[in-house]
Image (cartoon, rainbow, N blue to C red):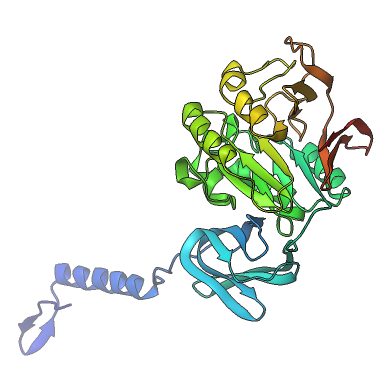
Amino acid sequence: MQVQLTRMNNRTKLHPIALGFILLALVLAAGAVAAPAESAPVLPTLKIDMGPTLGDLTTTSALLTWHTNIPSTGWIELVGERVGEGGPAQTHRVRLQGLSAGQTYWYTIKAVAGNQSASVGPHRITTPPESLTDWTFAAYGDTRSRPDAHRQVVAAMLAANPRLILHTGDLVADGRSMDDWYHFFPVIGVFARNLPFYPAVGNHEHNAALYYGLLPIPSGGGDYGTEWYTFTYGNCQFFVLDSCRRIAEQTEWLQQQLNQPRPAGVDWRIAMFHHPAFSSGPHGGNETIQQQWCPLLEDGGVEVVFCGHDHLYERSLHGGVHYVTLGTGGAPLYSPGASPNPYSRFAFASLGFCRIDVTPSQLSCVFIDTNRNRYDEFTVTR
């Protein structure tokens, strides 16, 4: 800063006003020196806050998804190698290829953001053997807004030792809400990091991008290429549909799929979607599905159909096919009898899941509640 000085009689004197400016300048300069420099924004502590979740497991591949609370670069460490590095992003999806049938692999998820790092694992993946004919899977649905009740169902389900788990939809109360997913993933995390998880979209998902991004859904058709899909595991072929929308489009797709020869080694065909074709719950049956999908399922060799939406357990028999409603994963329960259902064979309100034991000659199904009580055991034979 330059200050104007006045000379008098060879001596330098300051005008009083100038002196005031000098003092003010010195105070401001001192303040400028003393003020701390602006610090860089502090990032939240990096966390892998949802997942990993395993899906689309075959004899040679697996699909994994996970989510971090801030954008990160992520990858999988598998057998000492870094696989699928990508980002920065919050949602990560990596397909492992080149696996061997019937083998167990240990993997760790890694994430890096700036100078921070995070990891989870090791967790295991066990690929199915080339020939899998005697095995168990589980099905349930409508977990929605009660994680404590959902957790009870999961504990009972894991005691059945399933190799994969189906979910009939309405995973959360609102699929557009990140908070709802934050409540959902810790509950399924005890199994979904190791066991493949296959969902059907429900009406409460609202067809939200979060549903498709956070879950490892196999490729198929519709939105994001995963709205509806088919997959084969062991000696079962599964058809998963979206009963909330685009029914006619899926009717054509389903007919094409069912008209194709069964894949080699497939003994059973099983379907899953959210809205039940037949139900005595308050929502009742779905006439559109009865008219468009049921004839295809019944003529196409499908033995069992799993649904949700009405929060109860009910088994209906129509056209030789067992239609099982499993809205029993944690949502508030409904009492049966609110709607007419002449095809009902068993119905009651309880939290629980369906255990399905598979052999080449029969499917043995039983509903199990959270106290491990068994109800409505039925068997489909070939």
